[in-house]
Length: 119
Image (cartoon, rainbow, N blue to C red):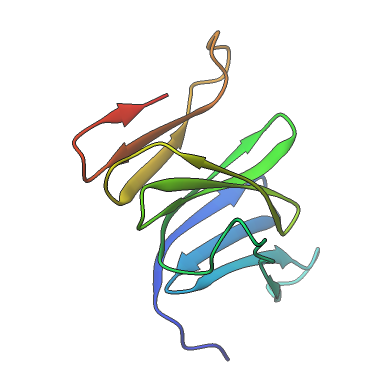
């Protein structure tokens, strides 16, 4: 199997998860009725370089997953393709968390090396 170092993982529901690491975003599905994992690598765009991915969270609402990058940007994933890049931090994005359900500003909270929390 793949021996790439994993920095974070996020789980959505009962069957989906994503891992991130050095030049790696990998999406997994658990095969129903088994403990078998099937994986596919994320597809980076021209705008989204495949470098250090440090954090991950599932969001919902049209964006399947968000990853935090070493350069301070957030990559928004649709399926396993990077759909959008947002520059939010002046340092690495170390942590991500979806806002609580029912919160008026449905989105993601990110924390970075710049000492900021961004919603």
